[in-house]
Image: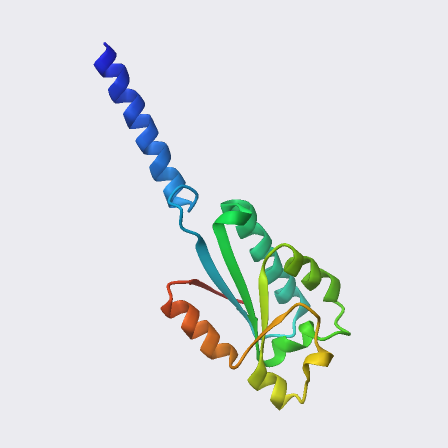
Length: 142
């Protein structure tokens, strides 16, 4: 009887470990997600910010690393005068990294002084997305 109980306990524990691993919570590794936003549509931006929030809730804030890459027409939401500035700032405070494409900034004649504080910068947005995918990050297009 003791062997049967020990076997069942091991089986249940093993199942819980497997389920936790499937959600990235028991393996000690973080889920890594890169979200690309290249549209000025505020609804798409809101959806991308929601994705980041939802992933942090799903995996736990310490178990997921999220980077939002803004490029092309999507860069406008990261400007100081953006109607979404507060929402982006809140996302940054939650630990999500938000970066702007410097190629797009040059083309749109934008300087860092034109942009929200606390965002990061990458030389090329598409290059950053490709780099992250090569590093094994999951990709979400927005």
